[in-house]
Length: 313
Image (cartoon, rainbow, N blue to C red; front, top):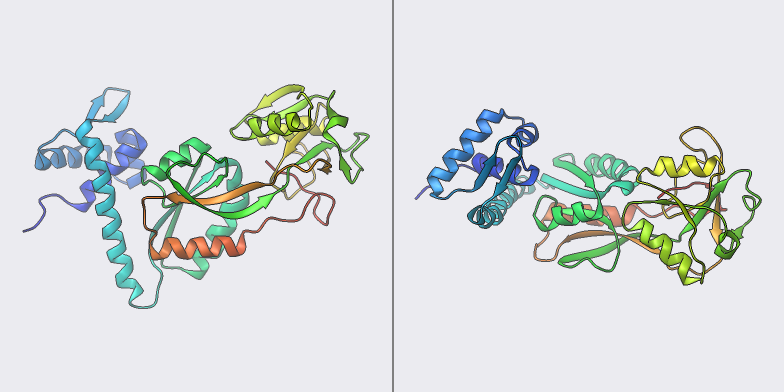
C-alpha cells in the first residue's frame, strides 16, 4: 500500500506552519506561493482534515488537527532524511540536512567558525542555521524546526537536554578615557553611581541587575537598547559602562572609538553557553557529529586583561 500524499507536500506544510504564511514558506522552499497553496489544499483533501485557517493579509494558523498532523509530519520528514543520510553513511560519509538555531547575539561568535569548519570536515552535510531570541530558538527546538541550538543557560530550559560548550565570566567595558580603564579589575561598588547601559535582550538585562544586586549595589540603569553595537558605542562615548559576557574581537566601537575591557573583582558566576536539543528527540548521527565538533572547537577566548582585549554580549 502506498501513501497518497508526498514528502514534498509534508515539507510545504511544515514550512507554512513554521513561518506562519504561504509567502514566507514559498521563499524558504524555493517554490511559488501558488504551488505551496495548491499542494497543501491537496494534502488536506487526501488526509480528509483541514490543517490551516487562512486569513487574508494576516497569514495562517494551525487548526487543532493541523497541530497533531504537524508533529507527525516532522517525524516523517526526519525519518526520510535519516534514510537518505544512512544510504550515504554506507560510503563512510556523515550526510543529510541539519539545522542549527542560535541566540542572536551568539551568532557572530559561533556560527561562522562552525559552518566553515564543520562543512569542510563533512561536505555531504547540508548545514542550515536560524537565529533569534532565546524564546524563539527554544520554541524552534521544541517544534522541530531546529535539530540543535546554542543558547545561554538560564536554568529554565524545560523540555531541553543541554551540554556546555563554553563558559565566560562577566566583565565590564568602559570608555578608554575612564579613570578605571587601565585597572586590572574593578569592583561593581566603584561603579554604583555611574550610568549602566544594558543590552535589553533576555537574559542579559536580568543578569546585569542580578549581578549588581548580588553585591548589594542598586543598578543605575540609564539606557537600554536591543543593539549590542549601540551599547558599545554609547560606552565608548563615555555615557556609561556596561557588563558583558562574550569576548568581542575588537577594542573599538562601531564608530571606531576605543574601549577598555576590565575584569570584575567580585566572584560572579560564569555564564554558560549550551548546545541544546529537545529532550524527547534522539539525536541523529550528523547531529551527534556536530555536537562533538562544537564542544571540541568552540572554547571561549581568554579573559579581559590577557592577550585579547575584546568585548561582547
